[in-house]
Length: 142
Image 1 (cartoon, rainbow, N blue to C red):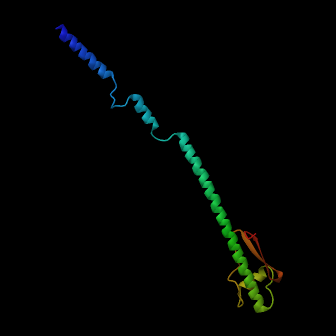
Image 2 (image 1 turned 90 degrees about the horizontal axis):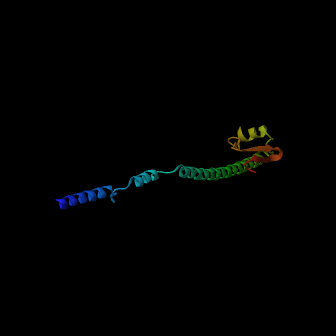
Image 3 (image 1 turned 180 degrees about the vertical axis):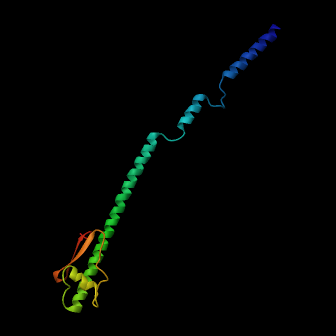
């Protein structure tokens, strides 16, 4: 009996020892906790992404505003050239240049001798008529 009893006690110890050993297929509590804390992004990572997006959006805004400025300058130069051609056409037809200021614009835009549909108005520039048929532009044209 003593031999059987020892074998039973030894088997119980082996089972107890095997029960206390971690199963290699199941992660320990520490590993599970580490995996849980590693899923997702940290606050620092999110802040870095936000800063990078801010820098990129700033670059895009400045690039687009530069394109818009060039567009305004091109529109101003085109409108100025159109008014110069209309002034010269008026001179060719009437023999005199249109008056300076608002009266000159009326001569170019109204009546049977209309050379322009309307006075050109642009975003960021102004085109003016001076005496002697001089056309000047201020703002985006310069």
